[in-house]
Image (cartoon, rainbow, N blue to C red; front, side):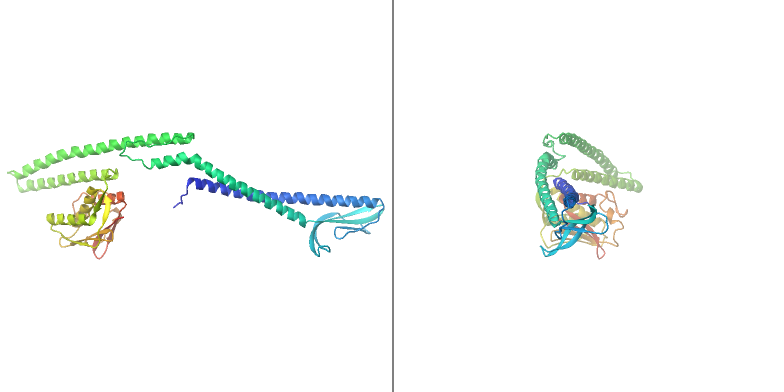
Length: 415
């Protein structure tokens, strides 16, 4: 995953990297430029000294030397003028020193002279490094000052954006209160505020329309389904029915009951996904699951064993807590063989329900999908575990399925 960083930090990192690169390049360029200038200056001084010596020789003054700075000697042949760096022992310093050397040959008054002029360049190197160091310190100080003021300026500049971002995090579909967006002197921020307001208003309108449509459909379906159910019961309870007609009507009655149950569960799923359950209470899950087990004992012949090792308390909606417990146990009963035992335990902030099974599920990744049934032999809506999953996602719980020791095991890990 790409690592996320804050906007101000990212902008500051870019500023520092760019400044460091520019400082490095400018330091290198300054070093060679100053070095070239100082070398030219040293060479100008060498040529100037050589010219003075030449003038003195033209006035018939005797040649003289001042090793290692100055050497004048008469030679039989003329050579080539050259400028180079050399290392010579300096008696005054009693060590080897680096010099810039100019060697020239002049014919003066009919005599050939070799004029060697040298200039100590160690001092020039010291001056060069002093200049570069001073430059680096000044540039570094400027960058740090600019970085601080740039950072503070960016914080002030982006402050309305960050405050609006925090305000947008409080946005709720179920509330009609508009997002308190702050106006800014920045045109783009105001345009963003305008688009956000238009988008949130559109989302709220669509949500209300969808919510109203879902509630209307659910409500309108309940009445005709109830009427059909009542009429079928009247026909079944009447006379003049043969076995085939009774069987068909009974099947239709079961399908209507499934359709009614599916309508209720789809409506519940929609409400969960729309986060319409906002009433939070402290729920004793251990006690609630125990009551649910007792209720199933009254309406089912399944053998359910309940064990409590730890009490589990969570904050959630009471109705959703009941639905969560009912769906988990109901699912275990539906997919458990007749002689199988269902085990329910509460331990270490985790609720576990297991039932006997022949083999593991072929597609466990599809387990919480709507209308998915692993086997068509069990007639169900295929929505029970989907509702369990959505409830867990709503409150940050974790639901885990596993197949262990010929048992289907569902575990809900609470916060």
